[in-house]
Amino acid sequence: MITAKKHLFIKLREVPEAGKSYSFSQDDTVLADELKDILKNNPFQADFTIQPMGDEAYHISGSIKAKMNLTCALCAIEFPFEVYEKINEILYIDKKHHSRKEKQGRANHISDYKEGGAFCTELHKDELNVAEFLHELIAVAEPPYPMGKPDCETSCENYQKAVEKGLFKPHDQIDEDSAEKSPFAVLKDLKLNS
Ligand SMILES: [Zn+2]
Image 1 (cartoon, rainbow, N blue to C red):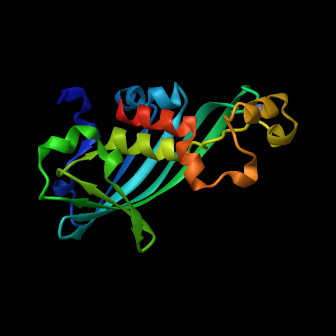
Image 2 (cartoon, protein in one colour):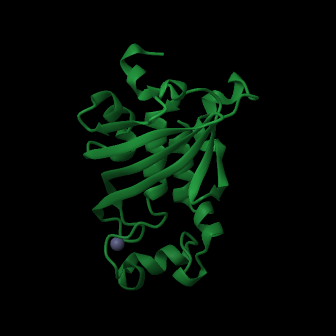
């Protein structure tokens, strides 16, 4: 591990029983660099508290605010997008799994079910990778079909062309499944795994 990044790996077992708060912003140049692919040079502010729950479980709660530059999926104009995501997750350290899968990153280990309104995430070691964690939250906040103007979907000249090419489905046909298979979702996955 590169020493400069050390503060971005939180040792969960070292978090005091009373919990501990963390703050990260663009002033952290090491972290800003890690998030650059998704946020460019836009500002961000993440504040969260980690609270040990016993039995290798930790509650992480807080929020992240950030700005992104998105490109309208239909007319290709660039527009600013405000990210505000609440953080409410339970992290489990899974002792049974060992190193092999670690490098695939946390993205593959999110389970869909929720417990008490919190997402549950399995970690394979006693460590929260802050850069990965925030990267993923931001990626999830990014809309699959970003639109710069509310009327892009109906009046944008590119819309019909996009539908004809099969790039987009009319809005009422968009469900979670097709959203996940969109070219943007694929791009997002690539970003996460890189
Ligand atoms: Zn547009």
